[in-house]
Image 1: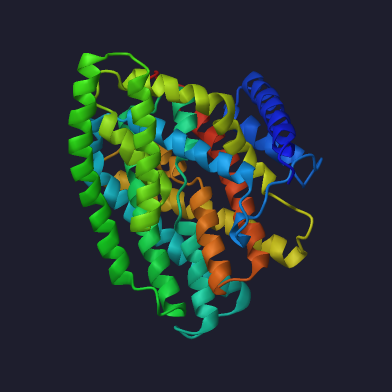
Image 2: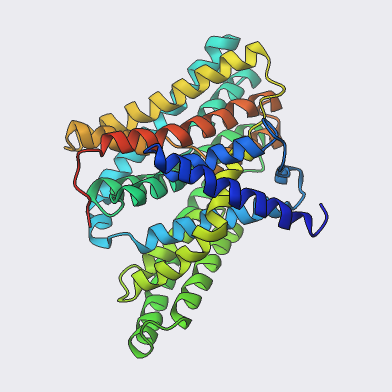
Length: 399
């Protein structure tokens, strides 16, 4: 890609995303839906104006990098907006919801694959492929739910905080499941090492969080509402994202969210979030949401794969709603709130892509199933904001 081509692509994405977001808002739908549809329209499936590179092949694609920064900033903002008291209060419940949200889709995906392609002995190559399809379903991407809840004014409530907490825990559990499953294919991956790395990351985050919070709190008291505070906060965000991914094998979005959690109790946390949101709203956010549509290509879909993909989407969505929703109900949420939690947890995005790419890299699944993953991301990303808007239609905004 020529250096100047990125400028053309960004111009097209920003204009298309904003136009479709306005149309979505006029149609009483969340703006993120419009941005995702914008990516689909300008992407390879329709107009072909913009293409996004395959970072799985080792190439560095500028649009993919910008999209990744977008989701990191979005999760950092979500951490800044988190109510720590609610997070601590919902922690045990969120863990139970996350466990159910991993277990039910894992079983559902495995059974779905075997129903299509036959039941195989446990431990065989085909059985491992079936289990890996279930592993892809376990991933939860909360970024779209975060943006939707923010637009609806329900991000800081008990339900919103529970969804955020459960999604972060779900991410950790999903990484552990992925490593264990891949470990059967590649003995070099040690599940025990992943468990240790995960624990060490959170120990590291707690230690760094306490020290960093005290330093920035002191600076905030001396230099309130100055730009140096958001700049330091943004540096912390990217540092934690890098450290989580590079040294602990945890998704970078988890590190970014933890960075937001560290700063959420500052007096100027809202000021930091406002400054960060400018960058996210202007460029990084639209590119991220549009990239979901850009990655969708419907040109090489056979009838067999299409049938499997449709059932893959249905089973993945239903299993998340059932698993997370029923567990929420068992944890004494009422039925309406349980349904909101189940729906809020059904979105898939960058984590599902990472899991699928890992499966392709180690040969556990064929590239033809990547279409199913993309369709799942598309449908879950579009349906979740719409359904949440309907479910929250009569609820007062939580300030």
